[in-house]
Length: 79
Image (cartoon, rainbow, N blue to C red; front, side, top):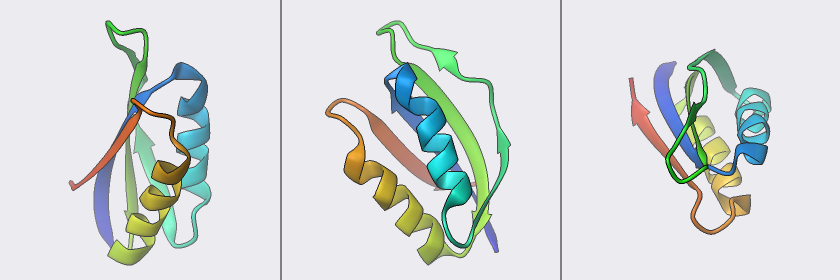
């Protein structure tokens, strides 16, 4: 398994849903989360670390990205 750092920026109301979707994704284990940070724009930044096979993690991030509203972002990097 590989560890990945995933960063979400967007509406506060979606931060919990993003974390939950990643934690419940098949083959993905959410291992840690930083406290959400409020940005100057009024949106929030949430960074989490997950473990999983590359395809499983990419699928989970892609699923979340598909329902994010315009202006919200989700990025992935190996940690």
